[in-house]
Image 1 (cartoon, rainbow, N blue to C red):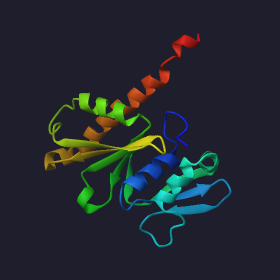
Image 2 (cartoon, rainbow, N blue to C red; image 1 turned 135 degrees about the horizontal axis):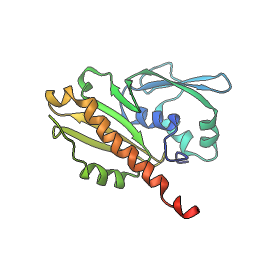
Image 3 (tube, one colour; image 1 turned 90 degrees about the horizontal axis):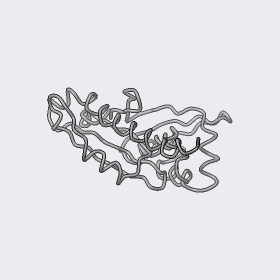
Image 4 (cartoon, rainbow, N blue to C red; image 1 turned 45 degrees about the vertical axis):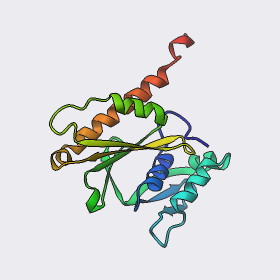
Length: 180
C-alpha cells in the first residue's frame, strides 16, 4: 500500500529513512498503548525496517497498521533539524541531511536537475534520490562535498526541501479549480 496522500505519514517517512540509512532506529507508539522498536542494528528490536516496509506495503494490513500509530520517537541514527529535515548522527556523515517526499522519483530528478542553489558553496553539494515505490515515497539525501558546503548544509538542504514541498503542494492543486 502506498502512502495515502501528498504528505508522507510519519510511519511511512520513518520506515523509508530506516530502510535507506544504516543505523536508524525508532520507536512506534500505537493507540493500543503498545510500542515497537524498529531497528536493523538493535538486538532488542521488535521489527527490522524491511519487515515494517513489508507490513506497510501490504493491503489492507498496512493502512490499518498506519492508522494505529499515535507517535514516533527517534531512538538513534538521526536528529530532526526541523521542517522534516534530518541530520545523520554518524561522525562520518555530519555533512548529510535527509528528507522524505511523495513526489515520484522521475519528477524529483527533473526538479533537482533544474534547481539552482545560490550563495557560497552552492555548487558543492550532491543530491541523491532513493525511491521507495512500495511505500510511495522517496528519500532524498543532500550531502556537502566540501568543508565550506558543510558549514551551510542546513541552508542548502532546506532550499532543496523547499522546492520539493512547493512542487508537491502545486501538484496537489491540479484540478482543484475545475471543481467549482
